[in-house]
Length: 253
Image (cartoon, rainbow, N blue to C red; front, top):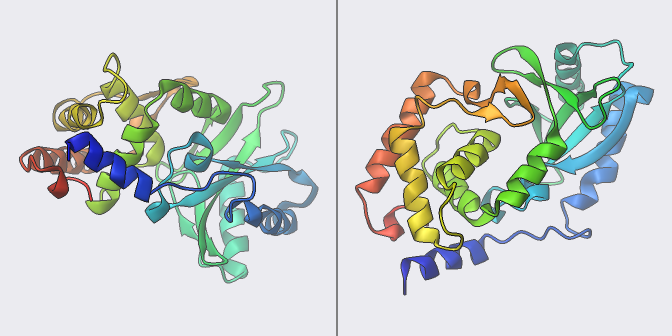
């Protein structure tokens, strides 16, 4: 078995149903009810997002992001919306977990991340999110992110690197991971999984800590600021240790 064959076996094992009848999509009505009770008429729309929509989810770590689009005329600042949603979910006994831009809950034995996103007046599809770790809001375009990841054609490599991240218990937000993988593989041949993963690990081992990752939808938003320098150093150290392994069975399983 070649290295690529081994990696594709893992991808097949981790395949996720992303069709309209997928179990995670069936949660949408329940999420809409929860969010409607929270914010009322200021809730413009609830829509799936994140890895599930980009085709970069894995079965062993699958969670669906639901984006709560808040009307642009809502007077509540995004940081207050984030805190208010956290309190609402806590009051419902859902044990919410704070994440960089979302709040995670377990619903019907499934992991769900809810992203409060305030629509920006006069700027269709652009939103203001809250970075909980940096305690500040930022503007971005989530549709742009989805398009960029899908059009890059690196879903397989992203999924495998997510498994590597999870199996090594690394702090590395998926958006940052996706941008890093795409940057590392610019100009690399599609389909050469083992070679491409090695290139990504080399990127993490050498350039990752020093290189800034900029949101393609907003040049003022540094995605790399989602991690501290110490957390980036940890990614670098684990990547270096991984590259010393050589056998793929010891790199990702």
